[in-house]
Length: 415
Image 1 (cartoon, rainbow, N blue to C red):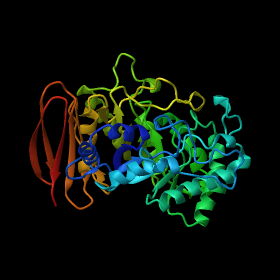
Image 2 (cartoon, rainbow, N blue to C red):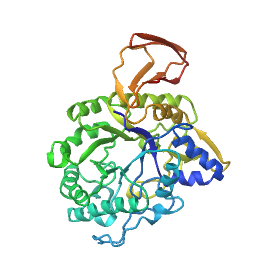
Image 3 (cartoon, helix red, strand yellow):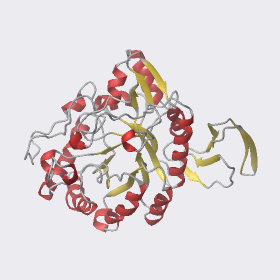
Image 4 (tube, rainbow, N blue to C red):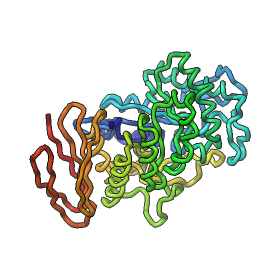
């Protein structure tokens, strides 16, 4: 079953939006979140404090006071600012509904075993209770300010950022975070963390999921797509744990994440949409229920980015977004990625169920969904450089469909 499609709320995006005139700002938000007049994004990422595109200030967490295990100095004040995530989320909420999933790159540095050595930045177990309280306060403070976090993901790419092994994530989840949130009656559901690629998820997720005491707290399995392949490993993980939905929760073009150096970023070519369309198709075929891109909005330079080398955030860190806002000339470009992603987010709504589709034509792909409210949706993608015509058959009826070269087409059957 489909849970949604979307991208990420990051300070960099809010900074870019703020460069536009007020009316143009609203047009961008409408184009992303309105289900009738825009893409209607339905699943969004919102990180806990510092990460590479939280660009409105220096690196931060919600409690940078060493040893404050009771979280007396906990504060989300920055997220309430003009470029803050709560401000951003509330502005988007005017146009559409979406679920929020929140991962964390790092806890406060004082919880780490060796905060100045990137290869040894593990969490000291003596702070597990404090970290559980940190997560709780985050959820509570956001709720006080009108934002419900639907899913909390304990760590973002633990192999790359916080160097905490999955055995310790398992213990943190089942002995500290899960029990505390349950005791406090928190409705936010938990995600076990987010592997940087499919192979890592395949290898490490069983460490948690084969422990019944940990697994009972896990709502779904998020993973990142930075290998751009190995979809079969996700299909195998689905077969092993069929009751837990798979969510692809982060991927992008970034030179730091393997984007070819000869490709200028941001990208303005239409062929790039075909690449991302094939990624979405392959993840859905491997049983993904949600698909979330990384940067939703960046400027013409692929920024602005936050720099904190000790936290793995280099300078430069050029990336490709869904929407480019040229801050100098106040020009908005909806990339090819936007249009391909919008075909899914706008028409394949939460609650839709993917149904079996048979047949094969080289260079053409088809996915079919039964809509939650009834009716059917078919997504057809032609990756050829020439036009194609395909035939669809369903329920004893047939339809001939012309597909332009390098295109994506949506067909709807209303109930």
